[in-house]
Amino acid sequence: MTDSSPAPRLSVVVPVKNEALNVLLLVEEIERACAPLAPFEVIYVDDGSADATAEQVLSARATRSWLRLVRHEVGCGQSAAVRTGVLVARAPIIATLDGDGQNDPAFIPRLVAALDDPQVALAAGQRVGRKGAGKRWQSRIANGIRAQVLKDGTRDTGCGLKAFRRDVYLRLPYFDALHRFMPALVKREGFHIAHVDVVDRPRNAGHSNYGLFDRLWVGILDLAGVWWLIRRRRRVPIAQEIV
Image (cartoon, rainbow, N blue to C red; front, side, top):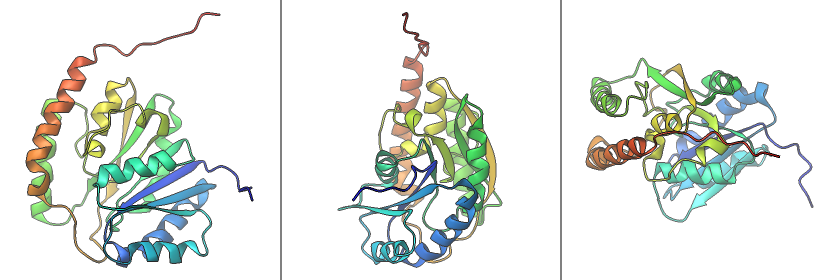
């Protein structure tokens, strides 16, 4: 039997790991937020969860034909989960958000609307009102260093709320932590970046799977690598076939 439903205009990719307690509430919020953007699909990418995350997604899917689940056999990281979702997505526009409930799906329509400008390939959420002095301090230091090196005009690359063109994303060189360097790499491809302020929320349940020192030293190496990629791209070719 073939699927007769219309192709989605938007694919929402949600990378998750051990977020069983947050699945249903977030799915309901995404459903409400994306109703004006229908037809859409939501792709949960379970990155090797050890809890009932997959079962919760399957339960929610029972009454939602637009909800999909892809599973990694073992944990491969957030960037890998995002990439898996983008690769299986059917829409030309992708929105992403974290699966812990801290990213409010209500901002997705605003991010998608920013892509109405054909020169804009990425609409990046920038968090305001972050809770916790420790998080603000970590973010300020990391983003300050990155901004000085990459000069991509983005003050907060750690926000999971983004909307972007699928074809442009697939041009980018893939590496772990790609999601944190998308503004600089999209700019490297010759496209513009839009920034949308989004309100940060406290986690609904569970605990973070990421820590500052888990990625600090790797992040320094990634930053050096992205700086090198930008330096090596002198000009974006504008090609036209002559007929």
